[in-house]
Length: 361
Image (cartoon, rainbow, N blue to C red; front, side, top):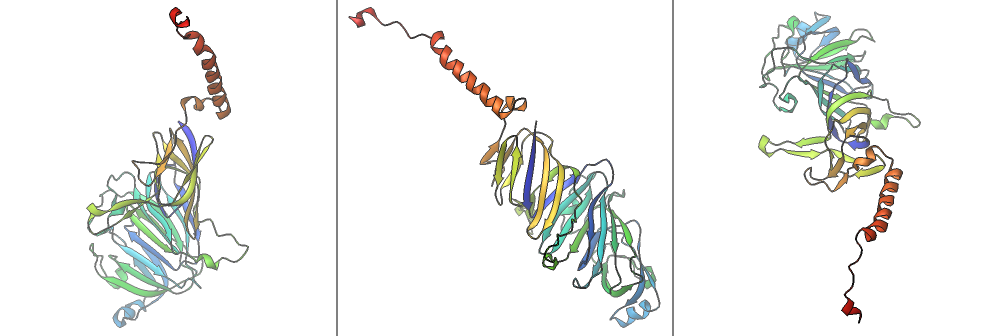
């Protein structure tokens, strides 16, 4: 096996977190335009403050309460907070991943951050199902993350679906049923809400625009790096109405990979093929940029290849067996020495045949 490392700019990626303990993944994303959670949660969210609605009947109930309980019991239960990004105080404080959590479809596009979380104990990829209302979720509760957010003090538009609101007499529908929306002015600045996310849960964040970063400032590090991972994929799926017609595409835009003394360029839409071995085992850094995700990684393998088609790569890095124990200079020296000895010894071991005596006359 040989150590390799890479630096890629990608549109989308997926991986499984394999660290020994719960680990910080996302952190300190401020001035969110929206926060959208879809999935089941074992504990309810408690919203405190003032509530109102344009619906007269709903507004009459909201005006009498200063606390609202939101229960999300189903895989398609949805909780969405909306705010004006220019003045928003809505923020994600942190998202932590438990051991063996699969992060699917992690992407940044046009100011929006998307991902889906699923326990690696579930064989089926529930995150790829378009209709989460019809899926069969395991009876056992499998945590897929711990999510903490801060609503701030500015007015928020709240939308919930397949959710139970006891104070309003609204029951949860397991199908994609009735949606309830209302206005919420949170009570007290600095209040944090925590949710334990069950598998599978989808998260969508409308993040601050990169143009809002002033000259001389660096954009915050939203992704906490140095993650122990396995089964890393830089791909995306071109979805259609018929799953049989779906096409897997490379999400790589550009980058380089390096093994031993060799560096190989990876062009847009080429697949990175990792040969036999553990593969990518460490995400050193994942930085959100306006173009996508800048990923620094390392791992071990017998070789690397790139190409527009997985089965027919056009470039390879496959170090020779001796290079595992020798430097490139030493390996080249031994090859040169063997070549020289061959040139000297070969004529002596196999002398030319004696010429016929008659031919000399």
